[in-house]
Image (tube, one colour):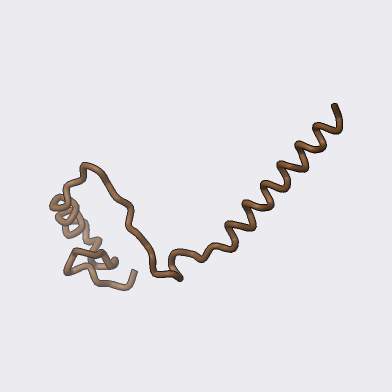
Length: 73
């Protein structure tokens, strides 16, 4: 019984180490230029653009699709 537990513990440790290694080997999206914005289902783009202008988000942020949102943040 003890041998089975040790084998399982060793297997789980190996799995965690492999996952950690795989995560560190991947290039961050910022470096590859492949940043994909999150998709929102059922959103209203016109209301979003209006909210961006109303709350002044375009004064600090760069937001694709909003002509006035070309700041540095």
